[in-house]
Image 1 (cartoon, helix red, strand yellow):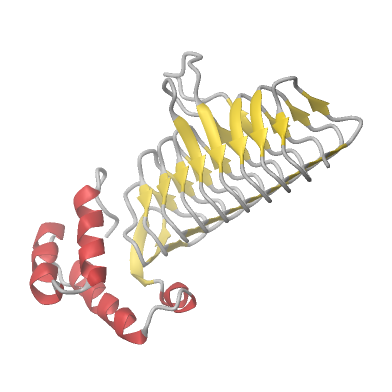
Image 2 (cartoon, helix red, strand yellow; image 1 turned 180 degrees about the vertical axis):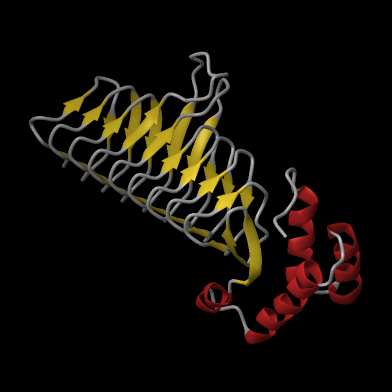
Amino acid sequence: MVNIHPTAIIGKKVELEDNVEVGPYAVIEGEIKIGRGTKIGSHAVITGFTTIGENCQIFTGAVIGSQSQDLKYKGEKSFVKVGNKNMIREYVTINRATGEDNTTFLGDGNLIMAYAHVAHNCRVHNGAILANEVTLAGHVNIKNKAIIGGVSAIHQFVTIGELSIIGGCSKVVKDIVPFARADGHPTQIYGINNIGLQRSNFSQERIDTLKKIFKVLFRSNLNTSQAVTRIKKEFGNSKEAEYLIDFIGDSKRGICK
């Protein structure tokens, strides 16, 4: 059974699965699919070409699927796809992508706090937290379980690595490596995300290995290429080393140091 408040506006092409709830004065119009058990708060707007998964909570005034703010956007058909069990708080904005058939993507289990902005072509994977007023420019890639503190701004095309944490009010213009603790304006690396790793059941042995790798990468006065060479030599059998080296190799903007 679908529960729609009588003041809500639902377009003809909207598909609502069982147990969807739509609050007062919400507007859902466009080619929209909303999964089982999702709750849409009052005055929320879901528009464009948008798919939202199951058991999501979308709070008052959120706007999902509005057109890209990118000046290159010329009205082409593009998408927003939101996975399952996401919590999208008050007045969050999520824009659809620039480029025909491209997608702005949220995975599963993310918490997007009030007034955060997810711009065109962003990818927020699983279990991430974007605190209040976090701003993602276009094409930002947020990996699993990353945490971004409030009022932080992420430059376009930046990647935030898995299980990293960024302090509030940070300015991030380069990639943040996985497992890092970062902060500042501009952002710098201050070590590993020790608490986050413990909460994700990393063994003490793995954490100690990461500390040694970070010391080579960030505290040895080596440039990045030299540090990677040394890490390969000293920690080549470590999965953590391999993962970090691959991340660095894939970086287009370079990494924060």
